[in-house]
Length: 162
Image (cartoon, rainbow, N blue to C red; front, top):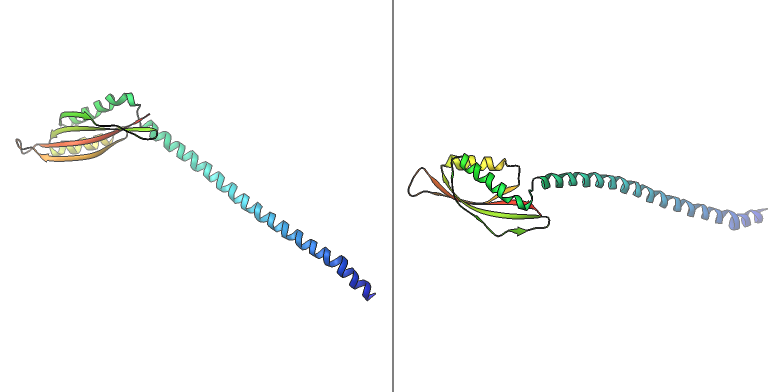
């Protein structure tokens, strides 16, 4: 009887226990992979939300980029703001454009003259334009002929969609 028990243990119970242990390890490995996939699925949903937010932001900025053929409208707006604030526009020169992926930067060199407060008002009004512009350079000098007047060389970049 003892021999029969030993024989059954060695040839039947021990292999069955090993098989059960191996199956438990496989199930645990599959559960770990399933948990990892659930985490990745949640992250994929987050990435989808982030992509939609980025798409909305891109669309917002694209709406602020006029087409390239509307440069005269933007230039007219800037000139009207300068005149409305009491600045006297001098020469306006278009500098070399820079082409980026999806948009163009058109720098404009302007010579303006007027009071300090007129320059301040001009910059605050230009900031409110519905287009994306950037003041790259702003060189302010005192006018030799009139001490209450200032002269400025300004480089304003206007951005356009391609």
